[in-house]
Length: 628
Image (cartoon, rainbow, N blue to C red; front, side, top):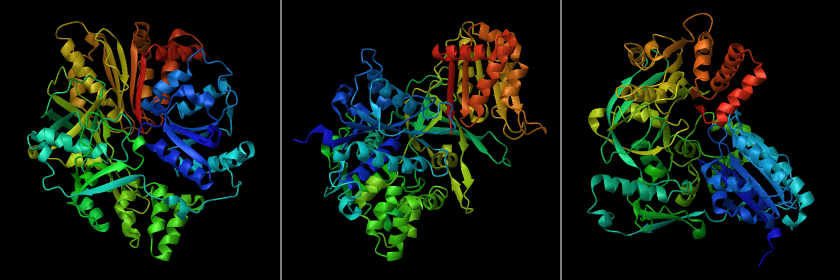
């Protein structure tokens, strides 16, 4: 049995799968240096074993407003125990690489907290923590490349036993590539649906989606594969003027399978549909039989994550269905490793050389210009390299997973017991090379005709905005589509007001032009009048900022300043603050506005206002839901 000291442990914590990509890249680079590596998810590792390790590399992402990924919560709680002394990890070496987005206030907060906690417990850092930034032109790899270079150099100095063949030894890529991680088994089955013959239509659809996604290489541990319910669209209308540059839509859906109880502030995840023609083109390009029946499973069966609710891993599924439901071949750009593996299967020398260059650190920026910046799809990349004939198993492993898209629910279940409403910005843009691009899910939803009765698979999740009790005064700020959850809040309070007393609600909305993108104008005004939720008679108010309707730009924070006294009075009455919208600058600008208002109205110094707002956060009365 090998001693643990010869094994490099890589622990990752992911919410969407990106940190696993990084962890696997680190493992590949270590293996090229003849280093023995073990990769584990933090929810698949006993934190009590850390003192027995030699060196641990952590790859962690930050979610929401500085939150740990779900897969890391138990691990992190263990590390925070007070009985773990300052010598608990003495003699252990570690390195931390974080994935974050500098558009958020708490940028890479989890990596920074983890780094400090490991140091406080006595562990020694091999290199300074690395911080990958989604906002960087080259993404997180811009920070990962130099960080890895430093890691290997420093690790070789202090832990040479990891590299038994010396610091300059590198296994050739050809030797290392080996077999893909997933195995595809082809079946001869006369009736694929024999086990489901008695199932209802919805049961059949649910099982089919569940079994496909339970076999997906992109499955995140503990993620539910089977949808919670199916919805049918009943309304689809624009909220913005047709000539406006943005197309924001209001969608209304009805439950068609079973009614799921949800709350205001919850999030709906939608599995989008890919273009059937593009899926067919991918299958044809790869010389695959769309009607063949397959099962997919990891070669390393002990690492297999099984959804206990989907007891169908042994039931074959049509190859075309598997691609359609699990592999994003029509909208997402592949990772750098995709190009590296492609280079092994390119038979044209000039294609092989170009792919190898793209996969190298030197070619990173050119790859970014070609791939991510243009949002090239798997299908488009394959068409650009026609000599590449890659086995389907590699596509299963390397194609970007088809991800659910999350939207804040903009309705109240009290007002609409059998419905769910969404407010969706239909995404479209032009690339640097003037190629038109569209968001997969939003464009698909916008294209649906309510008369078609298409069943939409969905999942319900708790959001970052907890439902407030009717007795809690509210100050809510929701510019643009950030107003979506607060439409549900207002609907809920309108119903509650019919049978009881509700606390005041101040709502600040912002958009560019009053005539072009004033979302839900009539809705807000109707609730601002006749003793409505937002009326002055109820102690509330609605304030809209139109940034482009005058030479001087006016944003929500300016409207907040105008209502400084009202905001302060509500805060003194125990009001909670809710903020939703773009993560770029808005949340921090709103926070600064609150600091200025509190300082001005209370007469206290700015530092006291900052502390006061932090105490609100700790008390669970300052909530932010932001997205990039």
